Amino acid sequence: MGTFKIEGGHRLSGEITPQGAKNEALQILCAVLLTPERVTINNIPDIVDVNKLIALLQDLGVKVQKEKKGSYSFQADEIDLDYLQSAKFKEDGRGLRGSIMLVGPLLARFGKGYIPKPGGDKIGRRRLDTHFEGFINLGAKFRYNREEHFYGVEAEELKGTYMLLDEASVTGTANIVMAAVLATGKTTIYNAACEPYLQQLCKMLNRMGAKISGVGSNLLEIEGVKELGGTEHTMLPDMIEIGSWIGLAAMTKSELTIKNVSWDDLGQIPTIFRKLGITIERKGDDIFIPEHSDGYIIQNFIDGSILTIADAPWPGLTPDLLSIILVVATQAKGEVLIHQKMFESRLFFVDKLLDMGAKVILCDPHRATVIGHDFKSTLKATTMTSPDIRAGVSLLIAALSAKGTSIIHNIEQIDRGYEDIDTRLRAIGAKIERL
Ligand SMILES: CC(=O)N[C@H]1[C@@H](OP(=O)(O)OP(=O)(O)OC[C@H]2O[C@@H](n3ccc(=O)[nH]c3=O)[C@H](O)[C@@H]2O)O[C@H](CO)[C@@H](O)[C@@H]1O
Ligand SMILES: C=C(OP(=O)(O)O)C(=O)O
Image (cartoon, rainbow, N blue to C red; front, top):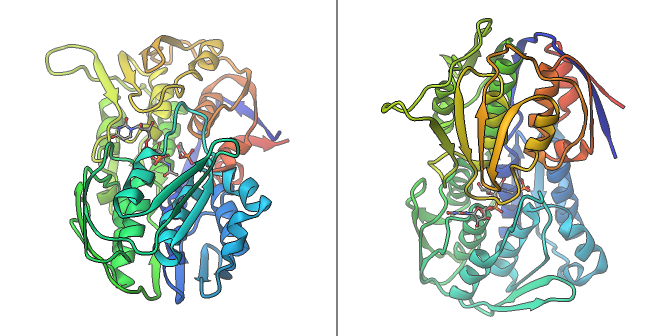
């Protein structure tokens, strides 16, 4: 188990550049299976989950060539489908959540796709019904081996159809889109997820020869094509990392510039941090956060009632930022109700914040009320274990703002999604060591 030692209470300063988006990368990498031609991908983050997925693709027979840092080319012209039945695949396939999106492209191109129950954060139930109902709608036969937790879909031909998804699942939509692009006829997907990740995937597929319209909306129409060709694609900056650095700047009262954020793809993120009282300035495509030497004040709703920040499918606020927002609120002036609607177990990490002296009431598994300290009482350093990727980074931010030396164990969770985080934080003045 990896550990960070963090000496908190220091101001940071300078510039930080966000990595390529983790959750976009996981979709885009799976899409290389849709063509035997070469696909070049840029701005791939060097993080554990992405590297595990690249290794899975290699085991499947995809030729992977590193062009330069963050840029790889992939060629899926000799796929070893037997690998999908191997013990190694059953083990490695469960190593991350994103591996589930191998199924759609494999089904579309080779008529069969298999996956063990995928991993990812343990943040409550993470069902896969939307994915498999989508494949079944396209004509696939579904089977599930309960003992091995092994899923499979097979089809001689996928046929386009109308479907209304039971929920706007992000990876579910990506999976179904990747299956439908090579189906016969027209597929309509209503209640589709439409995060920038999905928009990027659809744009890349269209460049490969797919015919997807409605990109960016929750109604996608896909005219199936016979084959797809190669392309080049560049990943957006990671909006969850950008949100993390906004929170970090505010909590440590630091002046920070976040470079090349792709403002137009950030949706509600700047607005929500502004509601917490944080000043965010747009400078070209950078975010500038001035030093908040007098703290920050949470706004109320217009009628004077307490602000609620809740997640919702895009263009609502991503659930992946709520843990960070919660931590930032612990030092604000004012109160906020954090409502995590999607995941059942993602707020339990507040226990660690309570140990550090934060004022938080966990109302139930989905809701926490935070009463900010207005920096009148700083958080106390402590020893903690990172339960999931975003809680891990939230605790890291708390530790950097706390007085004294904190220890965070299980930092593998953080490394899953944040590239070389300790080196990058040291470059802006953080006192963080990997033990
Ligand atoms: C690898 C990857 O891309 N992971 C992301 C992806 O996971 P993933 O695609 O696995 O998450 P889903 O979008 O399928 O759903 C996440 C959870 O939210 C619930 N749900 C979903 C849609 C909806 O309209 N209402 C609703 O309540 C689901 O029941 C589920 O419990 O999307 C999640 C939701 O943005 C993010 O937290 C994950 O970081
Ligand atoms: C929940 C997340 O990731 P995953 O879906 O990979 O577990 C996340 O990125 O916040």
